[in-house]
Length: 305
Image (cartoon, rainbow, N blue to C red):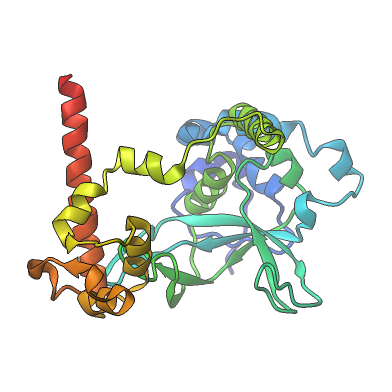
């Protein structure tokens, strides 16, 4: 019969061992390993482990310690795999990445705004959430996960393309997944400053005291689209680039692109002959390639000035 032993102080020696997160294990239990095993702080120093350890030792804030509600009324925290698949090249990515998110209680009725049905749970990003506010929440590892489209030029980028299941997770993957989410924008001090800055910017925008810049104009300045449109289209007629881009984005990956432009705009928009046989996905790829080329040339000219 196999026995058990407390290896907390030597946790760094077991980073590549498969672990099981028992029911009731909290975020505080996991992050306390950083204090119990100092070697972990050095191993995960690029994920601001020392700053996180200091915050954890302070314990939950007073409003949470007395049984008050957790941030956003979260029920628990969930670790799940974050696999992505490029359905064009069939390459998987992010297969070592675990994503930590906050999960709310089961909804009693439909939430039309969030597109959730009764019985679903709302999920939240934890980025910029102070770690101390989450310490009391239990952490659950989900074996089943959704695989999403990784190809930026796919019509379905970021959407589910398959389902997966992986029952094993190592101690190192678990700790890295937790720290990656909690320190995505830096250590606790930097994140607090960023949160305050964003709140101030929002207040300025709402009061009309913040200058704004047209996003499309700024993007076109950084990544010039004029050259890309000239490379892919013979003419746009009186159609705006924004209108053409919207149609381009919605063409199905395996559908011929040129007929879709004709259906939307008639003969006013004409694709160059060498691109007439491209599918929606390949057309977007070639358009992006032309745009990147123009952007690189612009950077080179700027460096030479």
